[in-house]
Image (cartoon, rainbow, N blue to C red; front, side, top):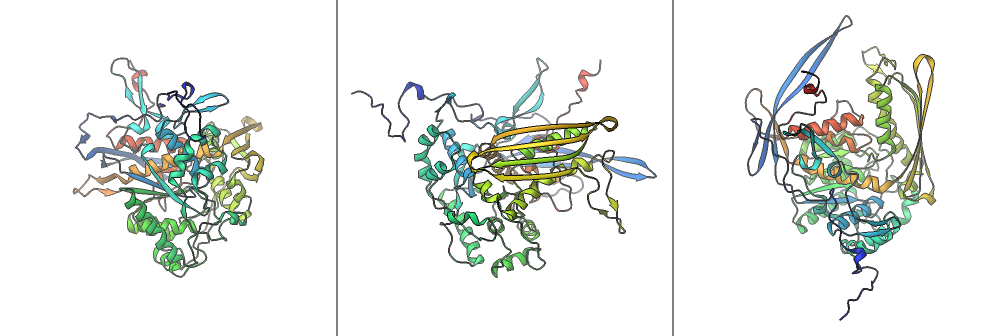
Length: 554
């Protein structure tokens, strides 16, 4: 009997053209992480334990003289070797990011190939820091050349193909149709992945408080947890998390906000400034408790990590205090995928080169639903705040170029001091869809009163840049739940979890959430170095030294 090569439109045709290609290197499974043979590192069946010396310096200033005292603290890190069976529950799973993530994981899982106008395309994880970039671990013992391995090979990490996917959305559209609505992926990939998306089905009902997102989103809001009782909504979400975990036999769930940008919440004493006040405000259905804050509280109370991929201030002080109380992990804010990531590199380059940016003007237009929501003033304000702070620490690091803030009567700096003029504009242009345009102008002072202008035009497919960041944030978050530490100076102590605010996620985030009272680092290079150094510390390796002393001496 002849083979039937016709296609229903949903099955993959049996033809030579659509034969399976080898798995892309970024999606390949490598069963063995690196092994460090050192007195600083030990391995058991369950744990990797590593000693680490945290070296720093304390500085005092006396009559203009800087006195530097090197410091060292001894730590041990203990990392559970087996990755957890992990679920990813996204709020906004039916949006552009959510459907793109689900579809591309499914495409990688089944190694689907598809036609584009450029030819045959295969799935991959390009754009992922963990899966598609490498880290230097040393030099080859024979050739002396640098040896690099994928970042995901430094410690055992969840493979993205193994994530169990689900979540909530205010829209009832099933994920296969929501993917079609998003218009992000090539048609031939959509055609093949649609039946798998249909199996995931419709999103769970979500919560919708119209005051927090743009009025233009109301037409989508047909899949809602009923009523206006925020305590009942909280219990409903907690039950959803428990059920998803039980139904899928999961060890860990990462709850991830990739829904619409909300307006900023007002910080009100007695409402959201402490954990107890926040819980009381939820019980009384206070109007200033946002949907994202409610989801964060639900995750914390269930002992599951929560990551905020949008710019609003989900983590009001009461949420951070609640996370501390329950030792439950949180991270955010706002995915850093295009214009802001480039800005954090270019601004640092200019300042580190001794060039003084006088103004940075950033313009964006996009046509997806994110752009539609951001066309409302209060929601745009959240995005403007997260984008505008990205150069602050670079300016603070160079008071040769920028005047320091004046010191107030109580010895506290007043304001930011001298700072580049910085403006951000976002416009909604439906015709361009998910293909965002970003235009930046950097206007700087150079030698002896000269001026320099750098203009950049950046066209990027928004969701295809954001999706790998969601994967990286999810996988890193799961890893950090398996890492414990103890100080080894003095009496031996028990290993304890990391501090709940996961500032090590900063590389992927525009407005990094950090431990209260500590400085925010926006420099992309420093963020990457911090993450790389931490991963190496967990296996007993020193952070990279670009000194290359062996090449400088006899």
